[in-house]
Amino acid sequence: MFKGAHVILCVSCCLLAGCAADVVSSTFKSLTSFQSSRVWLNKVSFYVADDVNDSSPVTVHILIPYKEEVYAELLKLSAEDYFAKATQIKADNTGYLDVFEWDLIRSQRLDDVPIRTSRYSGAGVIVFASYTSPGAHRLTIGEEENVTIKLNNSDFSIEATNK
Image 1 (spheres, rainbow, N blue to C red):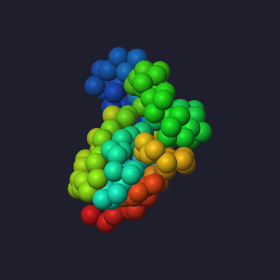
Image 2: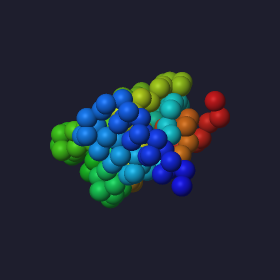
Image 3: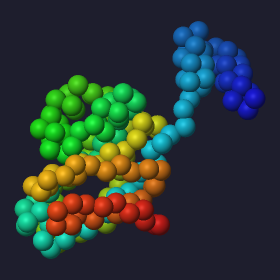
């Protein structure tokens, strides 16, 4: 009911303002197919252990795909597989995937790094970290706005932060 009232109001305003039919159609389609966002990520902090990755740098990628099928495919990958294919994944999903990248070294600390997404609603948030130790080294972020990624010796963790 409430959504319907917004559609009628927007279409009426467009018609009264003399908008072209294609603008009215586009507005209608956008409003009727609106999905609530599952991505609220706003800021990320990084805490890197002194002995991270046996004292080797760690590359971290935060991915926000805007298609469900891309999100599902990324969830199947380990970090090792993702980093081997990262260039092609980004090329294949131009406009449908935000990738935020950092190369972090031992004892490094980054606080409140802003995340600026290209769209309002994403399918989810996936974090990959390039450790030399065995393991998936892939985690997801739920609906948290602010998180801290803790890079430990052989793996990482993500904690929600209240800021």
